[in-house]
Image (tube, rainbow, N blue to C red; front, side, top):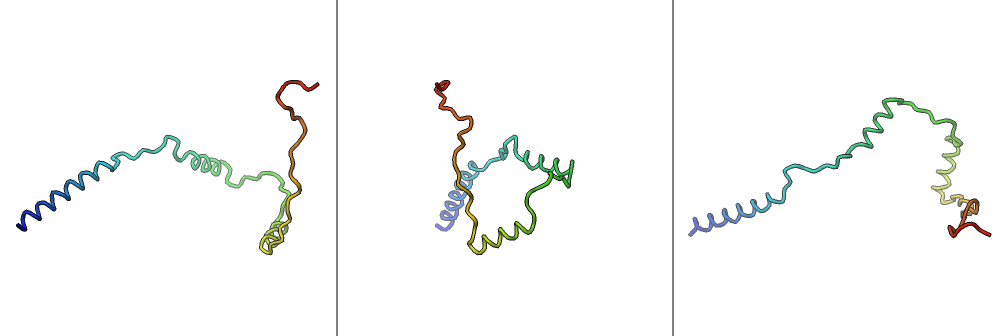
Length: 96
């Protein structure tokens, strides 16, 4: 009786493993554009590793003050944000 139980357990295990093998991919599918951003960044750094982008309006002292205000919960709120009226139209044709 022990041999039958062992053989049955082995058969069940073989069927279970065979069923799981059907779920595995043999060839992983990777998108054709996988890694393009990394390659573009690498090419840009190789072309000019110390690129300079003109004068900026900030410096280390201003950044440190901003960080300290953030840490102390005294952030300066931005000025009022609104929509621009320059060049806007309703899209219904020329205004009269």
